[in-house]
Image 1 (cartoon, rainbow, N blue to C red):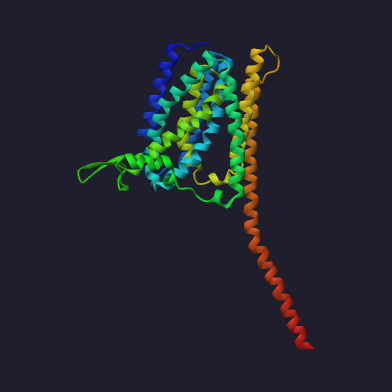
Image 2 (cartoon, rainbow, N blue to C red):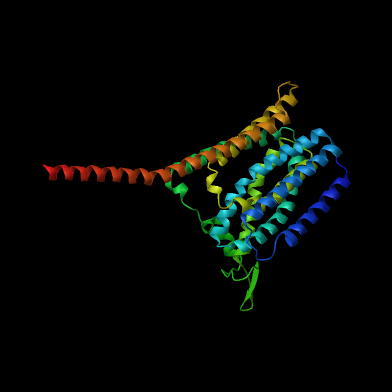
Length: 352
């Protein structure tokens, strides 16, 4: 179904208004976004996406509404991986919490532009070369398997648990080699003038790395969403609504990301499922087969995988906390029992 230009114009106006609202109303310059505020903002962005989905239902029909909801859920879940990278980037470049929102805001603007290019290119390839669906599906399948293997390897080695430093990254070193930079972070600026020279600050370096990271993640997420819909309007709007709420989600969860131990495994399985669905459905469509995975089933399976990985992560964290608390108590009780036995033996020895 073709979406009229009026819908596109209306969506662009809406996004411009939302970005202005976020920059000048929701956030004050130099403000450290607290968890409570971030949670309310996350709820606002999710609610807004759901309201938009209702609008899609009434104006564009049930099928496109279901595609939007599924695509939004996929993009939202896969974008969680970005949060782990944001934490790594900001800690490596010593970016103050009060500066982080500004960097992420401009990062979102870049994502709006680059995502449009990726989506347009992906849909154009599918329309011209239908067999590319097998390539996209196989890529997602292999990516999901690789993610599982990498996570298992990291968790089984001491090196995997060590905090990485983005300053050792080859891309970061390359940017530093070609761009005059300073380590000065006294002001919330991307560029400063020192001794007549205009130098980039770590804020600008963080912005470049975040943009590059988004491009890398888009290579996974865009094909995954294209497995659900090839409607340009649905794919792009679901992507943008998921990205708009990413910053508030980061500030809400940055302190507890380590608790979601099984989330990465859940995301890996989601990629494997979507890749398999993409190839199965394209084969069914090409060979007029009755067997295919409907969008409704995909929505529930993805939701179930997400919920299961989060619940298992919470249960794991609770069990670890209990062990940490119970450990010293058991040791203390053991020491007390040993002391009682020792004293009783001493008393018996004296009485003899």
